[in-house]
Image (cartoon, rainbow over all chains, first blue to last red; front, side, top):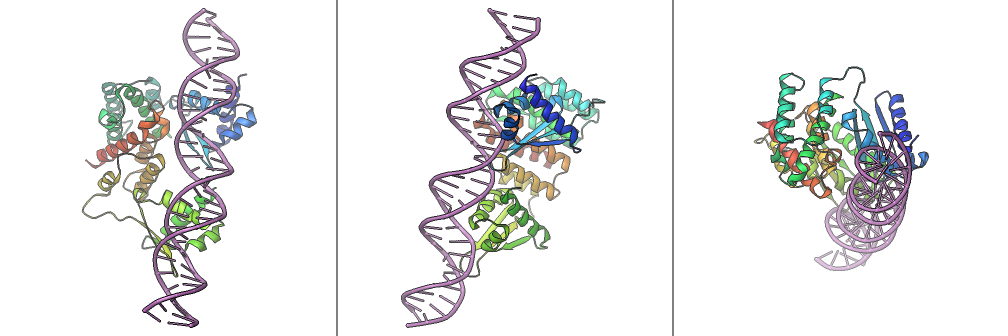
Length: 152
Length: 152
DNA sequence: CTGACTTTGACTTATCCTGACCTTTGTAAG
DNA sequence: CTTACAAAGGTCAGGATAAGTCAAAGTCAG
């Protein structure tokens, strides 16, 4: 069993036993406990606790820092929003993004208010300071994160 | 819980319970009560109660000195959301962003749902593919665009 | 042997805590 | 008045704590 698997298993276990679906951990502590370098925790988080897989990760640095993992996935029935999150790839152009969001709105999966916010957050207007080559990736990531946040 | 968190919580609590929305405190007294050095009060005030985060801090030195913390009043002629949009500069770090959004939610200018979406859209987690040097500008731009979308 | 996944560690950034020293204000003695 | 001292609060740099980034090297199935 790879160390990454153990880290993932440990976190999943924390999530199981937490009734609020939230696991809070300390990176250095966990790394030492499981015998790996701290940055490997980041590797596991970014590769296996993504929005596509139904997780949201928050963290804080500095004294009293932490990493919090929240599970929004209810494995049973995959809600339509989750389906969309999974269907979006690593990059997303502006017109596809619009189509997806408008579609969700017509199907009443999201409110008009929410749709409007998401649309401007995916528009190039908001990305004036971001070089073009990063925008489609950013768009994909933002959409996935925002929809995932709506599920929980 | 870090001491800084306790200090902030204490002040927020004072603000809650004061009917005029003003908290007045004595630095040395509070420091002793909470078991920290006086200058840590300043640290908390300058890092978490800034104008950008919706607070105004006044103080006086010398005998009978005090520190007063107020929530900013929005001018009547302008809707609070618009006010916030104008107050946000060209760059915005993550903690200011959080404070601003939480403040708006607290004032019921935005719903909890909307606040949650905005918060993840401003989080570094969503910016994995964007080089660090662009993130604070992107964050500012996104927040302003999203809030503007809510107004119209 | 190639490509995807994993592991590592050097370096970076963010946040918090502390203490030494500085400035402002009130007030009482001379 | 002036001066001196006491009673506040202010600033700043440095150390402690903790997470993030990135690229290079390792592993392993196909």
